Amino acid sequence: MNYEQKKVLVVGMARSGVAAAQLLRACGADVTVNDSKSEKELGSQLLPLEGLQLNRQFGRPAMELLEGQDCLVISPGIPDTAPFVVKAKEMGIYVIGELELAAQLSQGVLTAVSGTNGKTTTVSLLGEMFANSGKVTHVVGNIGYPFSLAALVSRSEDVIVCEVSSFQMETADTFHPHVALLTNITEDHLNRHGTMEVYTELKMRMFRNQTAEDYAVFNADDPGLEGLAKQVKSHVLRFSRKKEVKEGAFVRDDNVILRLDGSEKKVCRTDEIYIPGPHNLENALGAVCVAGAMKVPVPVIRHTLKTFRGVEHRIERVRELDGITYINDSKGTNVDSTIKAVQTMTDPTVIILGGYDKHTSFDPLSKEIANSPCIRRAVLIGETAPLIKTSLERAGFKQTEYAESMGQAVEQARAAADKGWNVLLSPACASFDMFKDYEERGRVFKEIVNNLESKA
Image 1 (cartoon, helix red, strand yellow):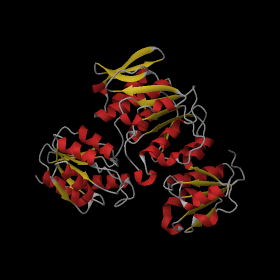
Image 2 (cartoon, one colour):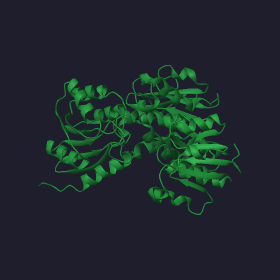
Image 3 (cartoon, rainbow, N blue to C red):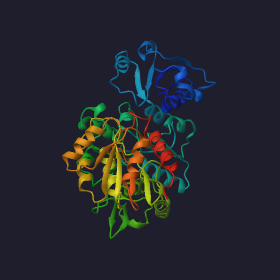
Image 4 (cartoon, helix red, strand yellow):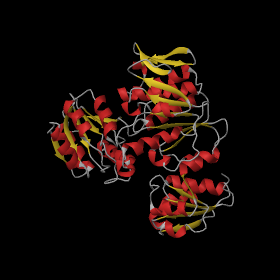
């Protein structure tokens, strides 16, 4: 779509909304920016908009600003069922999200990753693979760097690696990645999407505009993806750490194998992959598929798997103090993600759990903890603490205690741990009851841990 001289209302002035306004102005649109917060409340968030000719409407309902608009761009935090969004559609206003806007206006080969867990690690790993192959690479989307900022500078020979959330897919229309990867699907965000059927359908929208010239990559080990590959029109690749696949990436005799275009290539040994855990082996296999489809040379893929050190807030070793290792997994924002963190532990562990309630069941996690040889105690924080305690007790795990703050939780976990143990923050919940986002939660945890003094 050509946005020159079009009247566009951008609602939500977090990072993606601010970036969308910048991109639209660069394209010659007549832009109105809006947020329910006042300009004073938004503060430094608006700094990138300084000097741009914009109609600033802060502290006002978006409903009042719809008249005369050609397009409405909403942030991922705004559901497409919001009354002003529904009204805009009724008025014939074109409604999209920042991701869709950027996809329309960017250049370069687009690759995309979605799924309940593993997105950020896989996207970051792919970004390293493409960069190591000599490509100018933009890692964007739900990872925290707005796609619109990359769209301002991207060129046709660049590669774009986009982390895609279900929220962003609600407002995607022409989004068309050349290679798209679905890591897994487990229960999450039901407070917004209502049912697993709706959540799954939103994830599958990523493939909707693909053709036979494109690639769709699926995790063959994930039961939530069973049968979904039949819905796509593109060339299907699969990855598995448990069995051989017809085409894609798999493990044979502790070696990662890439089978593509009628030939097999050994990539590396599984124990050469730097990031630990079975879930990260899955992430690596998925990335191998995407990189293979994008013609990244196997030696480059191998080197990246051996050197990539993971992402912040995902099973991140913070420090060892008095023989206790502190691990930040603040990105464990749902049950399945924390189950994977629990499975990664090989030493006795005190886990810190709890946060914002997304209306998902904690029972699968409670069973995993009750059966884990490593989890010895759980310190519970936040809105969901009583729900998690009840679920853990139902599974037969009674070694729990409450904490009122992150600082108190760290102190209690430290007191419960012994030399050779871990203290693991992996909340299994979003952070919005106590923190701005999971990143702030992780930073606070790390700051508290790094300020601890030795008892020796």
